[in-house]
Length: 113
Picture (tube, rainbow, N blue to C red):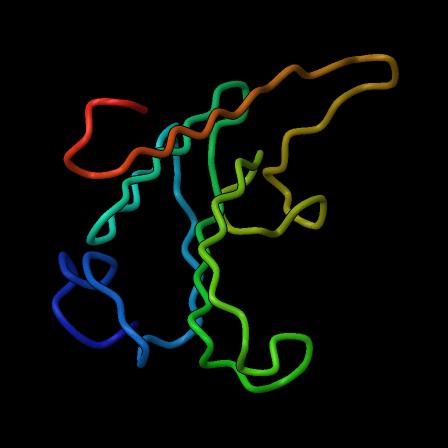
């Protein structure tokens, strides 16, 4: 329930944007663009992700108003509920899960990644 038009809520952010999080369902890539750089995070092997943002607005510990971060966390559940979630991916004893993530960062206007 963040203010503003739904399509624009995550499009542009600034110093006044509150800390927030969103669950990404059936996602595998997130692209973040700034004025001079673009970052693309991609993953496979986990079905969802948690996207969170803190732009120095949260004054309480541990942020103390000094953290500026965008978190993109591949996950087996889209909402950050972890193992407390009834729909979390569960492995049987001895079972394994393989997943991987990649990060590509490039300056906007350049051909190099």
